[in-house]
Amino acid sequence: MLVERRAVLNLIDQMRIAIPEQIKRAAELESERDRVLRLAAAEAEELIAAAEARAAQLVSEDAIRREAEVQAAAIIAQAEAEAAGIYDQADAYAAGELHSLGRQLNRLQRIVENGISHLQERHQARLQAVADAEAAPEDVPAADPGNGSGPAHSED
Image (cartoon, rainbow, N blue to C red; front, side, top):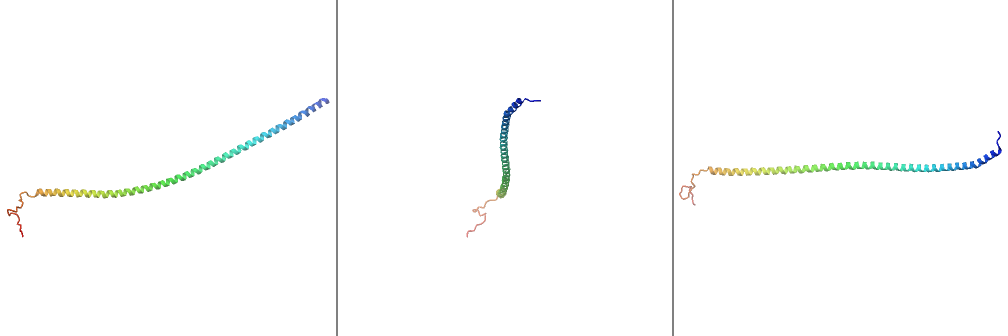
């Protein structure tokens, strides 16, 4: 098979013209690919940095939350202990006051009972005096100093 020389030369010329364009286009595509990869890598690094920062923030917030919970529990425990102490003191004070009031009431009860007893004795004495006065004979004349029937009085 014989190839025509002119056709081969034309083909080679076309290849010389086309190949540099394709090489140039391949170089441009490679450059574009590198640029896109760099952008993607930079964006990935930014996303990773943002994710790490958010994770650190969440860890920090979680640590702060846990510390706040620990402090809150300690404050609550301290408040409960102080409240228990206050209740104990209040109970002791109230018990002391009630005992004192009980002693005062007992003293007042004795005073009242003594007063009632005294009044009853006085009332009984009056009743007895009235009864004695009523039981005295009415027919006994009173001593008359003029008739001499009474007891003699000597005048010295």
